[in-house]
Length: 381
Image (cartoon, rainbow, N blue to C red):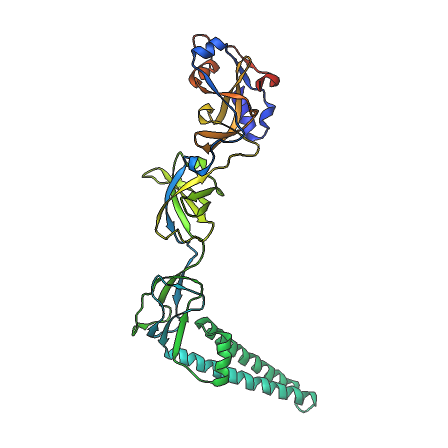
């Protein structure tokens, strides 16, 4: 009866709808069996971070999306390097300057196509004026319009090429006005961050697409933690962790796989601030910040939890002995569990002598108790 009730409870029905089984045991039998009880709590005493026993060790890493590769779309020879590795840079800061013949050709092509586009636009304006006066045919205006559109597209394509290489809109406007071609191409940082690597040197020939620098973008770091098989049920995505004397972390992912060598699972947490106390590749320990209360749940010692099959129960003390109460449970840390079921704050549950109670429940023992359904009114007494 209890197993069926427990399965139904866990599947759909509220736990309070099923009447628990009653184990009728006298006080003398309870004393002889060494059965002890503990009160049901609504608040975990000592839930401060320094009292929690769940501590995870791990390594600080850069988020996979934070590392950016800086490369040039044009080849050339490195002339000057403006930064060093491990140096912080701001977005737009110059990283290196190189001499590039393709860069000059790209500027020339843009100026040439921009000039062609301007001439085509002027010609279209004249032809539209002549057409409105009835001097030329519509076909000539259509041809001029098509030519102007194609010329504008060519100039726009080279304009975007200049922008991709790193030239600002103001610099392109200045180039159009001065028509002064420059062979010096400055490669700039796209984001603020730290220069991790700068694998080039002055005088080096670089090809288009070659990596010139690796920059780690500013932002919260990740910590890859290892949790044992016993610790994993105590964690969930969204939990807060505290690194001693440093940042707080939020759990963002828990691996569903275990390491075959040590049976541990990987837990990924993200730094909530940008405190510089966390260093990439640094080894840290983080303590779970467990809540002192869980809405709709009460806390009991982990030793009070009894499992039969896939269902969980507690032995709830009442006037007739103990009621076998089905519950849903989640680890709370510190040797405690949160449970949901027909159990109220102030009730008492068995924490010692569980083996004796399980024997009575199964109809074993020298003085077996009668097992009958307990009334809902007495189950919580």
